[in-house]
Image (tube, rainbow, N blue to C red; front, side, top):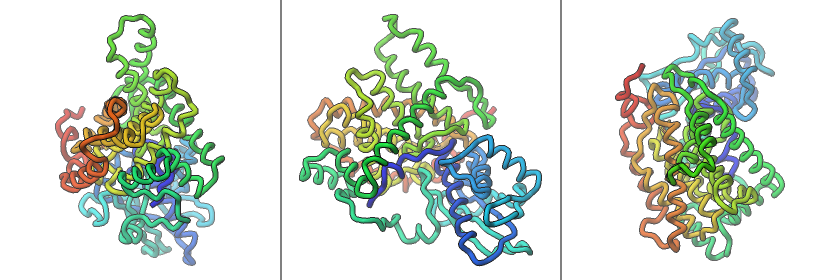
Length: 457
Ligand code: SF4
């Protein structure tokens, strides 16, 4: 199994990796299929199923799908161009595409929310269709958005776990136990093994350049979130809070008046800044998803700005270690809220961030595994119940708390010697089973939990 650090951390747009980025990626793949087909097409149609239908409006899934069908991709997304394109589609009922010409697409009729027919493969299902001159479907593809912006066709999903057809990698660990064993026999850290795997599929220079860009986008996102005020879109009237808290923290700095636990507010404010940007549809990095995108950047920024002796030269080790842990969770359980609840999103993010922090603070491989285990263990059972289907409540604050737990988990692990009672593999498996048993209403459908108990004004 090889999941690159660039699979785990992808530059994209908010508010959701599974409900916004994934559908856009699926649409881009569908356009490639159309271009490869010998047939001429005259129209497009899309239907959303399961969680994509239930929380699609709040997550802007329809918008992302239409833009994807119009040729937009998450990594090169341009908001101004997107608005102009959507306005043109609404006005003309057509989409203009390079190599495919002018295709009929009336958003009111051709963008379907199917609440009654969930697809069997995964909670996040969608069907994309191309039609002929008579409006009959001549190309149809089922896609599943399986979390973190990853997309599989129906056929790929049926084949089981995503296959890796690349060259063998030097350290192909599929579990935490294997990771610990390989680290022991090679004498390498997790980051060093992960780096060797990455370089075997690319080159050192592009790895360094790519991780530097990831951190740049994460950090820019934090800074934008700390500067912006106002009401978030979507109708819940949630006010952005990061700027106000940050301004207050800056004003208090050096005054010797604050309680020691104020440091938690710094971790929270960095995470909330990211998730407010995400909720506003801004540029974020999946870590491992958009909904949980604030935890890891917040912990890395906390490390760089608040931990004595911290250095940006450790940033890559942080990201590589975190990506290794995220890969284990994704491979053996899930990073998707629609599949396993929020334990799979914010829980995974906290495990990744805790591992990264523990590693750059000098933790042994065993301590790093312990840090990830503590962080994930104490998110077990957490449901996904976003109010009004928006990635705002509880998501924004939850990322702040996820960051705090991640830092605490790393700190606790560093106070031990790496010996611990619960193995990381056991927690990952528990998370998988708990997710499987979790009622559908707690898996990103907004049919239960806070979504039905918070007065919705
Ligand atoms: S509750 Fe958690 S899993 Fe659900 S949308 Fe919010 S951050 Fe994602």
